[in-house]
Image (tube, rainbow, N blue to C red; front, side):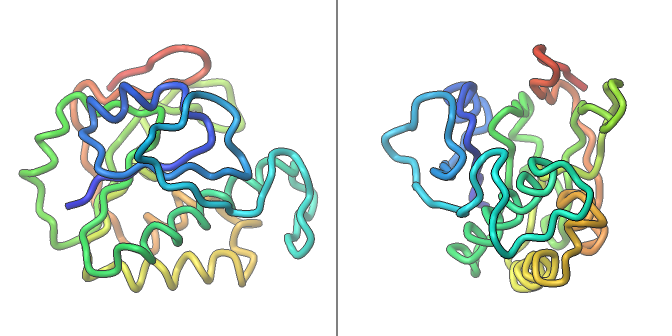
Length: 193
């Protein structure tokens, strides 16, 4: 299993690398705005800058950054999965610390699963335990299906209907994994399960 993270804000990347025992870090250069880029990071470009409309993307009545964020995540995941078509991939957000990371080794690796985190219940200001995040394990036997789902998400404008994390987990029928002491930086503080 390869452990990867991606993002533009790398404020907590050093801790994420150490605690999550990350194998690869991907930095979206169209969105990088914080934190130092590690020497061994892979640089890529989703082509979706912060808060700017992009030709070819439908925004409907949504806030520009809501749609841009959904598509940046989908494109990043598709790019990474395309590089690892024959491998099991564990995505871990760059602002999430799974302090009991070795417990993931004991979980059934035959189907996708997502790790529960504390998160903002958008659009409400509440913090809740969220069990459909992009902290998701995708076994090699599901990588092709996941890439197809990510393509469909963008091509069929599914991003106007559903956040990418919920869409992907629902369509992959991911199991949920709840571990103690999974910490997510939300609303200016670390929130842990």
